[in-house]
Length: 115
Image 1 (tube, rainbow, N blue to C red):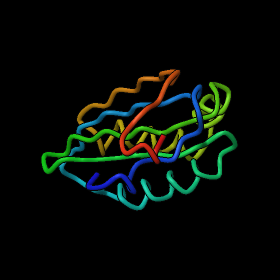
Image 2: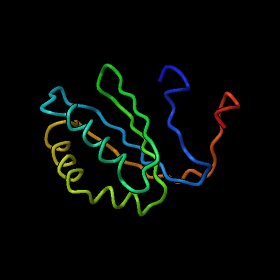
Image 3: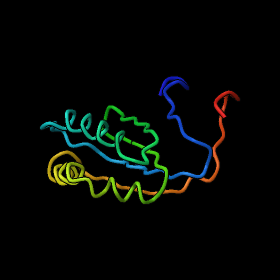
C-alpha cells in the first residue's frame, strides 16, 4: 500500500480477519482472472466487509479479508467456485499458503480521521 486511502474500510471492532499468506508459483494458468472473480464473489458474500492485499516481486503475498462473523467465513469457505479455486491453487498457483482466522477486538491508526 502506498497511502492510507488504500487501507480497507472496517467497522468498529469486533469483526474477523482471514489472513492468507502465500508464495505464488511461476505459472499463471488463469490465476489473475480467477483472483478477480474470487474478489467479486467474496464482495457479494453476506458478511464480507473488505479486503487488503500485497505481493512482492518474488511472489510472496498477504491478503487479509475482513468478515462480520465466523458464520460468514464458513459460508465463503463452502462457496463452490471458491472451493474449485482452492483446488487449482494447491495444484498450480501456489508453492505454499497458510490461512489464519483472527478476531479483531481493537483497531487504531494514524491519522486520527481514520479511527
